Amino acid sequence: MRKPLEKPEIFLQRREKLKNLIPGGSVLVVFASPESYRNGSVMHNYRADSNMYYLTGFEEPESIFVFRPGLKPESILFTRKKDASREIWDGFRFGPEAAKAEYKVDQTFPVEEFESKMIDLLKGSERIYYRQYKNPAADLQIKKVLQEFKFSQGRSGLGILPIYDADELIGELRLFKTDNDIKNHRHACEISAEAHIELMKYVRPGMSERELHGYFIYQVMKKGAAREGYGGIFASGPDACILHYVFNDKTVKAGDLFLVDAAGEFQYFTSDITRTYPVNGRYTKPQSEVYSAVLRTQKSIVEMIRPGLPFAELQKASIELLTHEMLELGLLTGRKEDLIETKEFRKYYPHGVSHFLGMDVHDSGIYQSRKDEPRNIEAGMVFTVEPGLYIPAHDSSDYAGIGVRIEDDILVTKTGSDILTVKCPKEIPEVEALIGR
Image (cartoon, rainbow, N blue to C red; front, side, top):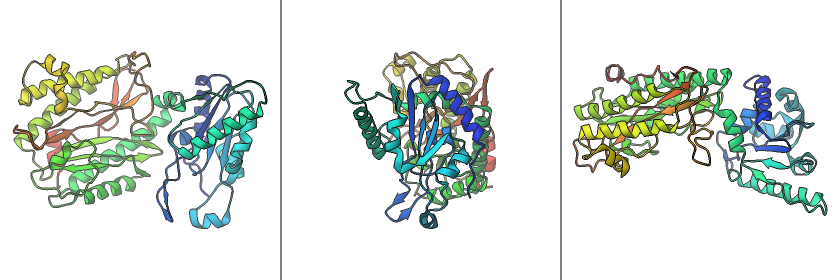
């Protein structure tokens, strides 16, 4: 019999916090991830939906969680039935009875009863929180349930219950990490940093990006990761200038830079690290100049981080700093202010410098209000800092074909910041000393 990954009390505490955020008369519904792990008769690895895991710890597909703050039953989990014949093929199932005992929810039902049970569970409700457009089958179920619930009210004149996006609600909760979250997050960052170090030691000219990708996965899983935190980027030479390079199938060559954006996931928390280094162990002069420009920018931005600083200031600073560096390198000419106003800098720096990090690599949380009011950085947040410069191969400068990004994961503390990925080297002498060792 499988056991929950973590103590049920952790999920009970999260649901208690959610009660303080959700308005009265609300019902929250969270569906498991779509069964994308099944392709015909071929099975692929399955990962539970982040919100489902965050609130319940339950990892089985086809499950549905319903939360009704202040009502009885308050927490309801719909699960697959026990089925010995299917367990031969698909593995262990808890079933409703065992799930109730192990995961400390108030009530459980077979998932086949979701639509019929929801008619009673929605009585007295004023709104429903649900994440639309992620799971088409779930969207249809929710629409059917709400239509049936309306019919059950007879000639009341009441319309269909309004649907509110659950992402904002749960996202605000997930944005601020508890001590247990930080412990898991830190471990994910540490094993990912160690895997990057091992990859630096392993890389040699003539290897394929795919082999190196596989070696990285081996390293993070050897150290306890359940899976990659996201599809890793292993881009050598000019392909490092492709922000979301996915092929990972070229041969790395002496003289090339190798950009690795990859991490492992531990207890559903992911890291997100990027390092860029020379395949043969020595940066050329142009490579070193671009790399140093990005590193100076990255370190300056990390030093800015503190509670109370508007989050948007990080992007503003990255643009100003990198535009200055582009002028110093001769990539751009003119007044810095003009280049920023006309967005000329985007030729070599087209992306944002940061994003929230947690159970998803681009994690939930609100960056600014609907009125465009800036959000301030607060203690307990975790996000990336990842400036980069990307000079395409057709560029006329001496830096053509060089792509550099340096990315670390930052926990905001009460007085400043804590670099969770600090163990992953990024200073040129440290990196060069590791390559091919």
